[in-house]
Image (tube, rainbow, N blue to C red; front, top):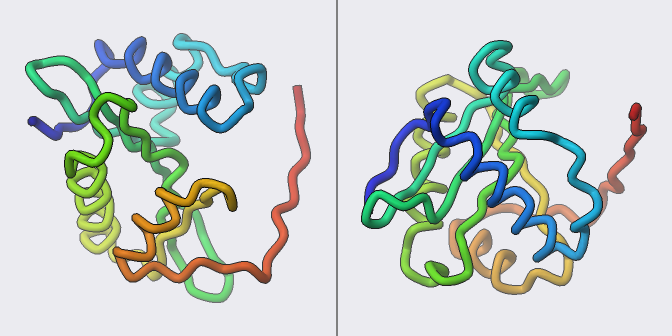
Length: 147
């Protein structure tokens, strides 16, 4: 297994895994982002960053994150997605990617790392708890959509 920074040639594979994640999360129709927009955001605007895990030179997982700001804490890293293809789950790949993002957060000097996990995703919850994460059940997410 290899873990590396995503390159422009990875965009289609990342987008395919984003769609797989949406299907897993029962939101398959929610993905409106295109490979072209993802490419622009990752490599031209650089508003987010991605890492890829490969097995035999085939992408099997990705992590996508960006930097944000907390008025209470200061700079933070937001882990938007951590996804491992079903065929490679429980193999340690997710842990390696998570550790890499934690390392990036620490090196960047952020005060906190945030992400979301669906309440019904018991295996992901167990994964984060194993990593001594604090899972907050007090805050309700708010969203506005601009399509």
